[in-house]
Amino acid sequence: MYVLLTKAYYLLQEVEPISEEGAEESGAALLLPAAEELIAGIIAFSIVFFFVWKWGIPVLNTALEARQQAINSQLEAAEAAKVEAESLLADYERQVANAKAEATQIVEDARGAADEVKTGIVERAEAEAEQIKERAQDELLAERERVAGELRRQVADLSLDVAERVVGLSLDDESQRELVDRYIDELGGVS
Image (cartoon, rainbow, N blue to C red; front, side, top):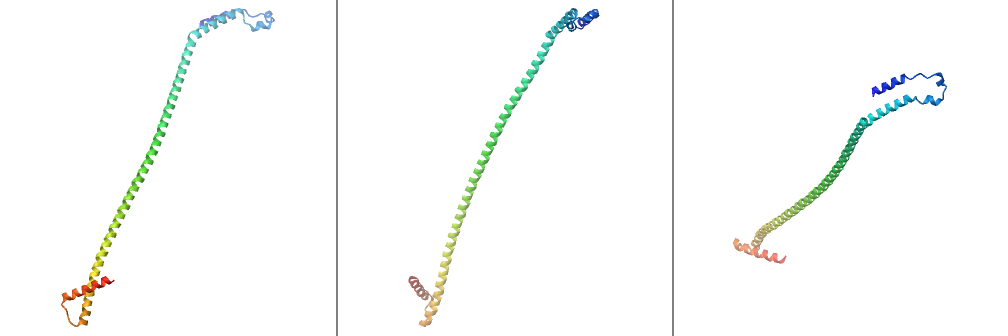
């Protein structure tokens, strides 16, 4: 290509300079190149066009296709990453929902267990209170019986003393006790 351009240059150098007569010619002649220059330009352009078309355009097409494939692969990777991110988000949201449900279930189970423990404690306390009440009643009855027995003895002793004074004679202890016990039984039946 360089050779062709240099040859075209030397060909142009050999062209004669424009005479003064040619300068006065029409303005269109100034705009259009000489026929030899036009032919050399067309040939040089054709050669450059052939080389660009034969080797340049395929290289550009290959580069453009490679770039397009790289962009497409990046778009596909971005789409895959987006799908994966959406999947991870959905999985995370599902895990959070499951964790909330599990926490709610644990709280409900704990409340149920607490209610059961509370009910058990209340039942045991009531049972213990009932046992304490029964023991207190038993102790009260026993104490009442003991006090009643003590009162009987004291009443019997007092009655004997009063009877001795009234009757003036002394009875033996056994007959005195029988007499007092009968008297107390009679008094108990009256009240």
